[in-house]
Length: 443
Image (cartoon, rainbow, N blue to C red; front, side):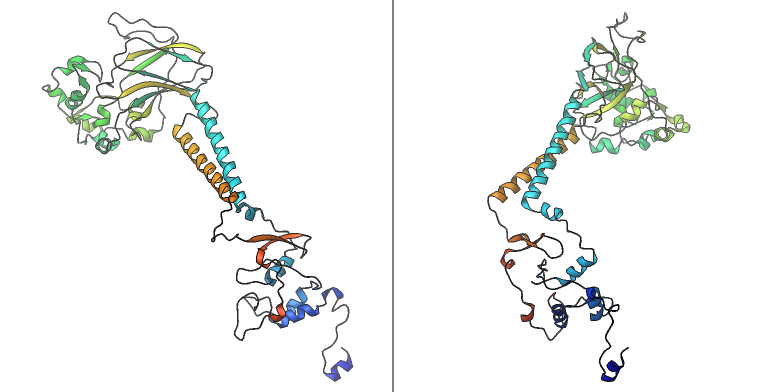
């Protein structure tokens, strides 16, 4: 330390090593600090000496900064933060997407992509299905054509239309727990089930027409049965086989005893999980006061007992895992008992297979088309409003323009109000308030 400086009471002068040239403070920045433009800290008191050591931007150039929403003028907090962040160039892509043109372009692109995806799904799903309607009056074989688009596995379904099993009285009375306990409110006895399934003296349940003669007075039919309920009573009882040639019927006019080994191998199978079977299990002590009138382990019964979502639904019948040669095939209705006409419903055989997009899903395709239409409509409306000069007072981008400046990087663009582009803000004329102000000009 210099002896003369100690005697005069003046602060000691630092050497060149302690105060390098690149750390010198400009007079303009001293004036700004004296006027109260400090970098505040919510954790500790702001040190002016610390600011002088950390900030070394020469003030011989004029800088234009993005004004704060609380007032006009330079945002020195943002400037110091930019310098601390190594002067990285800002990315305005997100802000540009919030402009009318950006939003319209994004809406049109998303709408076009969704529409193309929905049309592709619809095209491929229409090429991998065969639907064959039939009724209980059809006796001869039904002819279908299998194309090369059908690749294994091929799925076979019953398709039921206009059959309203979604009614609340049916749903509340067809729970698997109630069915196995015979605690249903309707169709508790076999006589009640036969009363529903005997139509014009014909048994549509199993084909034994003699049961329809005296089922009301027969004591064997007036005892509790398992399963019970409306869904169990309306069980689908049709069966069919698909063959490459027509098979002849027996002397009685049906297919009993006919060998279908040369036909397509339709596998009716169920998942082996035991918990699924437990829902339909009937305890042996229940048989003391009733009887089980069908095999509750049948997978067709399991799928039929699951409630559909509408009056038109599919129920799985079987799967063909083998390769099927393209050509014509005959569907032989081995059992054609389910009374669709008497119940004012429609039934058909639905054959389909999967593609790289899965199976047919009309609901999903309709939803995608509707969403794509909304996107396209939104994009068109935004373009029309933009090119028609529509203005709204609520838009935060109204009256903004880009300003080029050489603040920290070369020719960086900032968004600023058009009315303030040529505004020369003189900080010397800004009066200092007596009380503490939190605006950017008096921090």
